Length: 406
Image 1 (spheres, rainbow, N blue to C red):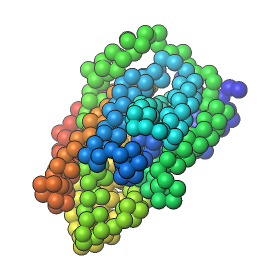
Image 2: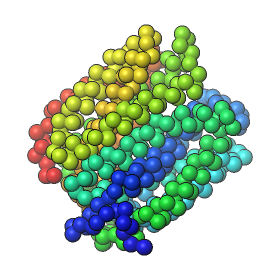
Image 3: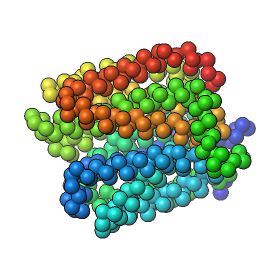
């Protein structure tokens, strides 16, 4: 089976059109893959109790998963420029099913940690899917397609907590991973029939040369450096909110349940969906204006969130604004860097997403430390400060980005 009819027509330059239906499938599979590394957050208490792990040590589950995810970005994602992406995606998803089942049936903490490490390493398949979608899309629609697929990723991150908390309350924490394994298996079957078997010829590189070339991209592409720093800053702000938000919501006087707290992910998902249009604006040449407007919204979003103890509706408004802004900048970033080196989209994805990992880790660590010292007000000042830094950096580098070949 060659390029299916839903992939539309092939263009002479090697790009294939991509229907909205297939883009939605990519978005669903991407969101499902990335959710695997966020399910554990609301499950830590249950896991710690079952395996008799102290609360001070159970956080290593998150650390192991995130560290392995970062390794996967560097070691696995670039393979999309070296081997057949269809085979790479299917094999990694099959291995993910095995890892998820391993966690779901784990009988010891050692087995649990090994499974979580494998889940983190293989979750980077979501970035291979983004790069593949970008390569299948026609140049005139690349931003729209990337925006749609990336929306699935952000929604997967945000809804993972809600799904995990609900299933944990109903039938236990193990059901979360077995449920994800089942969905992933259905995703594999669907992608097997949808993904094209034939792809353009690849560069003749060894694996070592491939990894080295990822690092060379930083030197060769100013737009990658600039957009990477923006990614680091916006995801620092993103992680600052989503890591620490549970602390004021679960403490008196609010004292919300974990299920109620997880529901705030729905507000974030609404903001992420609203930002899908950012890719279309980038396709039309409005990438810089979209970035500036989104960064202003990101900065303003911390004002209503600062009044969480006065009104939860203000928090909801701020969450929607923040996720709208982060997603809009993220989609625009990817749209712009993919235009520069179409033949190296997997390596570009890896190079760019490393900044994302740094930002996410920084926000998680900094926000909890600041909350311990200065409470929720301090967290909001931290988020606003990072957002202001992103806006100033964008303004300072504006002309430099415009002068970069597109």
